Every structure is written in structure tokens, then in C-alpha cells.
Length: 445
Ligand SMILES: Nc1ncnc2c1ncn2[C@@H]1O[C@H](COP(=O)(O)OP(=O)(O)OP(=O)(O)O)[C@@H](O)[C@H]1O
Ligand SMILES: [Mg+2]
Image 1 (cartoon, rainbow, N blue to C red):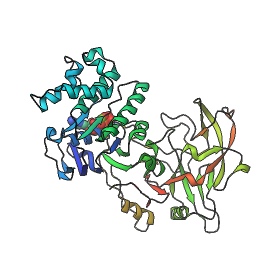
Image 2 (tube, helix red, strand yellow; image 1 turned 180 degrees about the vertical axis):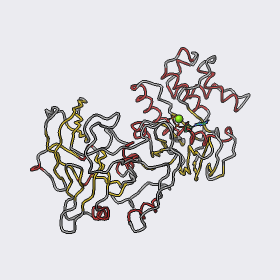
Image 3 (cartoon, rainbow, N blue to C red; image 1 turned 30 degrees about the horizontal axis):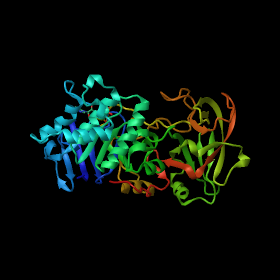
């Protein structure tokens, strides 16, 4: 049996007034593999522990198969949790570690057949008589998985189960977990702060920040239509380029987005999405360009929809099959706080919105975000560029992915073509306004 898990406006506060999980709502289908993704401290484990019954729910409802379950004892939920630190009993062999929960659940029944089947499934038959100290990290994690599987749980709740392992083993076990949970068809909620892991494992990914669900959808849809700069920046490598710009929409001329020293001219006739940007005239926005939206090429080879800018090579990152080139285009990157922040932000009230703005109203309908601004624009966009790059970033404001064929060196001035069809525009609060925010295919409110 597998479970549907629903959370409706669930909140949790350890300290009065600071919700570490804030009105969290999500419906997880039976058999689905859902990944909770977000930076450290954003409340992922707390959500998982509330589903498991290890943490009380302060407000809101948990439904299991549609039945109210806030007060159901953890054992009655019949869910299996797999933790980061494996949590095996050191004085028990693999066989006893896997069989122990079975003995507790059904005293007097021989757990051996189930233990043997599980061990076969995981390829750990040879390890049944060893103690945890005699196992490698990967083997221990398999035993921990075995202990979870043998119970035939109604759901797997996995809290960063692979983060203690080296990269190679992590990739290997990731594939195993994916295959195994699919084979068993058991609902799985998997917590990670690793976006690559989330993208490769999840049927859907739920992105969290500061205790608040930002967006939920298939990995593809969240990547293609991030709801705000946080979701855009958290998902995808290299990280999306976020540049500060100003919309210029003169009545008698072409519409452009000024990026400090250069500008992007929106191709005419304007698309519906670009027409909507008109109301942003004179306002500061954030332009989002994934590395695949920009290519190195002469203006003469521009395809329809591509516009030309230039970039000064600041740094070249050789990655073997491809090269990441860090350009300086004279624009300024937007700073997205909390991407790796350790603490959630206490909820703050938004300023009253400009009642006449259509896009603001659209955004309100899509659901206002809580947990503080997702972006900070502390200086006006037209001020002189900051001399120092934001912490942790190499110099340059635009990263472009290219083949290793180009011989690019520091200081070269290079022509770039930007594919406007792949342009994201976010408003000064960091919420997406282009493509049209009404396109929210998988968003659950
Ligand atoms: N028992 C507790 N008492 C007080 N605060 C707590 C407790 N447990 C968690 N917190 C706080 O709640 C917030 C969310 O914690 P949680 O463990 O859910 O984060 P997380 O997203 O799982 O982070 P990580 O990726 O680092 O594991 C953090 O700020 C944390 O300090
Ligand atoms: Mg955690």
C-alpha cells in the first residue's frame, strides 16, 4: 500500500513569532517521488519530520490518503525514514539491523525471509553477518535502505541520505534509489539541498526558501518557468545570469532593456509577453539569462530574435567537454539573498502595492510570496558599477557556456548574441513578469 500525502497551510514555530515552516501546502500523489529542495535551514527536515509524526504541527492539516492525520502516532503512519547519518545499531549485524524493526512490529514472526529478500534486492547478501564498523559508507547506506524497505512502508521519507558519501558513490546510489523506489511504487519524499540531485531524482521538485514553498513542479517546468529569481537561481548550473536593467519603452521608438553600459533591443513586432513589459517603463527589473540563451557569434550571423551585445573576457573555466566564459558586459548582477543562507527570514509584510499596476495584480492573484524579498537592489541601476564582485562570484556579470574550440583569453572583447526568446524578466521584487506570470503550469498554492 502506498500513500497520498497532503499538507494544507502547515506551519511550525520553535520560537514564538518565527515560523520555520510557514503555511506550507502540497499534495503528493500515491507513488510519487517528490523532492524537497532548498538551502540549509529553510525548513526541509522540519516538513519531513512533521509528515513522519516526529514533530508536532502547530497550524494547518496533514492528510494521509485524505484522512486527518495530525495526531496519528508515528508508528501508525507506517512510514520509513532514512537519515543522512544512517543510524544503524553498532552492536548488531546487518541481518539484525534490517530485521530489528520487523521484530518490533510483529513479535513472534520470523523476519529472516523478508531480510533475505531485501538483501537480495540491494545486493548485500554477503554483508548480512557484518557489523556496521566493518562496512563502507555506501554499504552502510544500503543497509539503512534495507531496513526501510523490509518493513514494506507506506512511504519513504529520506533526509539527505547520500550527503555523507563521496561524489561517485552518491551518483551510483542515487540511480539505485530511483530505480528501487519506482520498482516498489512507494510514495517518496526526499530532502536535499543539491539541485542536481533534485533534478535527476524527482517526479516533481518543491523549492523552499525561509520556510516558504516557492514553487513546485516537474524539474523541467521549474527550470523553464521559474516563478521568481530565487527558484531561477537555485536550479540549474551554471547559475542563471541575473542582471539589473531598466525598461525603456518610448512611444515612438523601439523598446529596450538597458543593462548599464549596453542594452537589449526587443525584436519587433513585440510578442505579447514583451508588450506587457511596457508598463514597467522606467522601472528597474532583473533580466535572467541562462547560459544557453547567449552564444559567441558575430552580429552578422544573428538568427531572428537574437540581439547583439559585447563582452570582455574576465575568466575562462575549462571543463573538458565545454568551457564557461565569464564576461564583463558593463551591467551589474542582482544579489539573491538566502541562496545558501543558514537561517530562515522572519515573515515580513509587503509594502502596499501600486493599485494601478496590472502586473502587480496578476502577481497577487498568483499568490504573494512571504519570507522577505527574494532579491535586493540596494543601489539605483544607473549608478556606476560596483568595483568588487559579489562574494563567492568570479569577476564578470555574464557566464556563457561554449565549446572548447574558441581560443578565448582574458581581456578579449567578444561579440555575443542573446536569444530574446529565452529571456526572463523579473520585477524589482524578484518575481517573474516575462514570460507572462499567468503561465504557472504546475504551481500549487
Ligand atoms: N528543535 C529545534 N529547536 C529550535 N529550532 C529548530 C529546531 N529544529 C530546527 N530548528 C530551526 O528550524 C529551521 C529549519 O530547520 P530544518 O532542520 O528544517 O532545516 P533544513 O532545511 O533541513 O536545513 P539543512 O539543509 O541544514 O538540514 C532552522 O533555522 C533550524 O535552526
Ligand atoms: Mg535538514
